Amino acid sequence: MSSDNIIFKIKEAVGNYPDFPKKGIVFRDFFPILQNPELLEELLNVFQNYIQTHIPGLQCIAGVESRGFLIGPALALKLKVPFIPIRKPGKLPGKVKKESYSLEYGTVRCDTRWHGLSYGILMAAKPIWRRSMEASVRLIRSIGGVVEHCLSVMELSDLNGRNKISAPVYSVLQF
Figure 1: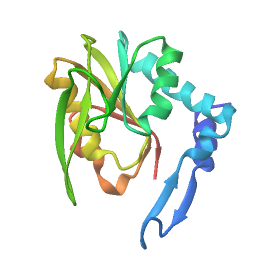
Figure 2: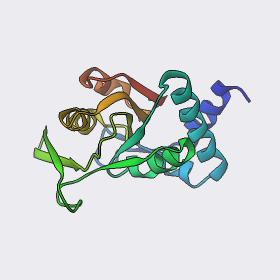
Figure 3: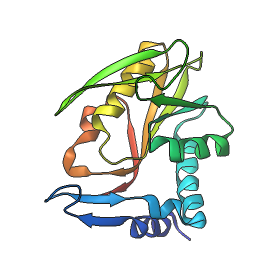
Figure 4: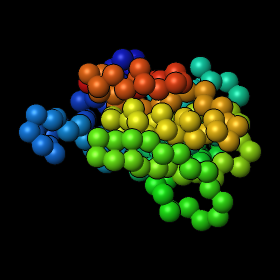
């Protein structure tokens, strides 16, 4: 099956919920992909093929809580590289590095423990990732890491999140 057909199958599986969580918003639900092992494997293969083609020398995958924790570890296992969590404040023990970012309703923070791995990609699965993804990029760079690419399952193109991220972005699906 061609990669275009595979991506079409993956996109067809995404659930659409109009007016959720509020009127005028269409919620894109990628959980049906996780509930179909064959489709999940195809999604992981799409990412693996992209990484092997565009990111030689990959050392690790960092995932942004919480949806990045669903795809990131599976992809890291497939590629035989470590997975680094980027978590909400107060969820990691020991010495952590912190980065804050602003939302419409206030300031939030993300934390990580990054142990000397210097060349990787950042994985987020949620479609509205422009602020948390860019904060995560800054966080990794602040401790000497290199963010080679940012990967996402879905991108909501009308939000222009890609233009607010200071690293190359690859999204499997665009809506």
